[in-house]
Image (cartoon, rainbow, N blue to C red; front, side, top):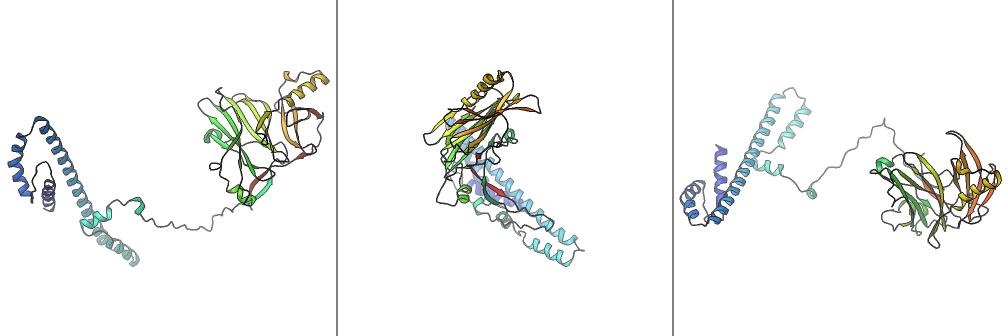
Length: 385
C-alpha cells in the first residue's frame, strides 16, 4: 500500500513540473483527469514537427519518471531488508556474550530507522568531504625492522675503471638512470640515462649534468636535487637518433677531471643480439662546451702493435677499458687494451694514455703495472647499519 501511494505521489509531483502541458495539478487523481481531457486537444493544435518534439519530450520525461520510481522502490526495499536482517540478528543470536550483544546492539542502533535516514546515510559524498580514519598499524614484534639508511659521501671511480650501469631492469622499466656523480668542486651532478625501445630492440643513451645549490651542505644539496625540476644540460647522446634494429649504445661516466671542468665517458657499442663490438672514449669539456670522441687512443694501440710486433690486431677481437685520469698528468686519461683469445681468457695489449684533446697518445707500459689514477668524482651512497 505504501508503494502505491508513493507511486501516485511521484506521478503528481512529476506532472506538476511539466512545462509542456502548461498547467499545475496538485494531486495524482487530478493529474489523471487533466491528462485524459486536455492532452489530445493540445496535440491536435500542434504542427507535425511540434507533435514529434512533444512526443519525444514526453517519452523522455516518462523514462526519467519511471527510473526515479524504480530507484525509490529499490531504496525502500533495501531499507526494509536491512531492518529485517538487523532484527533477525538480534533475535537469533541468543547465545552471544555480553560484549558481543553490546557490540551488535550498537551496530543496530546506528542503522537508519526511516527511508529518509537511509537515503541520507547512503548518499554519495564528494571526495573532498569524505573523512577517512587514519590507518592503525599494528606492530608485530616478530618482524625485523628495516634500518634507516645513513648517507655517506664516497669516491666514485674506486676501484678505477670498473664503473658500469646496472641494466638488469632496462627491458621492463624502459629507462635506467645512473647514480649521480658529483664534481670535485661539488657544484655539478652528472648522470647517464639509458633507454630501451621495444619496437626494434634498440638501446640508446644520453649524458647530462645539472647545477647544484651550493648554499646547502653537500649531502643536502644532492638529496634535494631533482633531475626533473632542474635544468638539465645534455653533453652526449648515443644512438638516440639512429633506427638500426638491435643497436646497443650505452654511455657510462668514468670520472671527473681533477679541476672539475671535464668529464671522461666510455661508450660501449654493439648489438643486443650479438654482444659488444668495441668501447669508445669521450671527453666533455664544460669550460668551452665541447665534446670529443678520442679515436686517437684506439689508433695508437693498433699502430704500436703493427710497428713493434707486426701484428694487425684488427684481425682479432680486441677492446680498450678506460681506467681514469692520470694523477701525475691530470690532463691525460689512462686506458688498458686487451685481445680476447677465448671466452674466459684475454691477452694484455698494454697501458696507453691520451690527453683530453685526443693528442699525444703514448704507450705507458707493455706489461701490467700499478697505476696512479686520481679519483675525483663523488657519490652519495646509502650505508645500512
